[in-house]
Amino acid sequence: MNKPSVLLLFGGGGGEHDISKRSMQFIQDQLKGHNLQLWIVEIHQNHCWTNAENGEVYLRKNHLLTSQHQLIDQIDFCIPCIHGYPGETGSIQPFLEFCGIDYLGCSQEASSLCFNKFSTKLWLDKFQIPTAPFIGLLNEHNDLQRATQFYHDHQSSGVYLKASSEGSSRGVYKITHEAEINKALSNALKFSKHVIMEKAIVGRELEVAVYSMDGKWHISWPGEIICPQSFYDFNEKYSSQSQTKIIPRANDLDDKIFNEIKDYCHKIIDILNLKDLSRIDLFLDQKNQIYINEVNTFPGLTQISLFPQMLSQSDHSFADFLLDKIKNQL
Image (tube, rainbow, N blue to C red):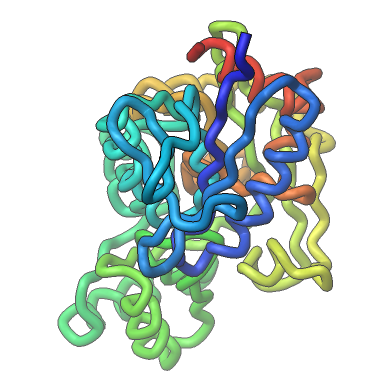
C-alpha cells in the first residue's frame, strides 16, 4: 500500500511568514517516522508555490500536485500551517476544496469570521458570551472623538487599540495617555481596515486548546501567560529574549471556573462552527469574571507554543492528534 501523501503548506508572504515556517517545521518533526509521504510547499509573497525538490509547483483539481511538466503526487490531506493570510483569513480553504483536498482546520467561513476580532466579538456578544467592552473604528479623523470618549470612560483600567484583522499581536497598542490615541489609531489602520478599541481587563491571561480527537471535542485545562511587559506582543511571543512565562497548566484555578470556561468553549465551538482545532484566549479578572478575548483557528505551533503543550497536559500528544485527523480523512 502506498504511503498517504500529506501536503504541508506554509508561508503566505505576510507578516507571519517566518512564524509559519517554524510551525511547519514543528509539524514536520511530529509526523516523521509515521509512514507518510510529506510534501513541503512554500507560498511566497508573489503567490508562487515552490518545493525544494521540484521548484515551482501547482495544485490542481483531483488533488494533484504537479510541476510544470509532470505529476509529482496525488495529495490525500493538506495541513495549511499558515498564520495570517491566506490560511487564517479563510482564503486558502475554498481553493483546497475546489481541488478536492481535505485539510486540517476550520472552514473558510469560520476562519474568516474568527480572524476579524470585530466580527468575532459581535457574534459572541449576540450569543451572550462575555467579552471586554469595545467599539469599532474605521477612520482616524472621523472616529477620533468616539475613541477619545471611550478612552475617558475606561481610562481607570486602561484601553487597547487593535487592528481587527491581524495576528500575533501585530497592530496592537496600549493607550495610557489621550495624546497617544491619534497616532495609535493611524498605525493600527495600516494593518487592518477595521480597528477595535477595547477596555483592558486586569487579571489573568489564559488560553485553552479546543480540539477534536477520537470523534469528540476536548477542552484542555487552561494554560497561562505571565508577561512582565505591558502586554504580550509579537516580540514577547517569539523572541529568544522573551521574559514571558508560559505555563501549560494554570495554577490555583478551581474546578468551578474551569467548568464555566468549558461551557463557554463548547458554545463557541457551536456558534462559530469550529473544526479540528482552535485556541481560545480569555481573561479572568480579579472577581473571577471570564471575558473571551480571541479565537485563533490556527494557533502558533512552534516548539515554544502553548497549544501542543496544553494537549500534552490533557494526556494527548500533538503527533497523535495530527495522525487522528489524517487517518479520519483517508
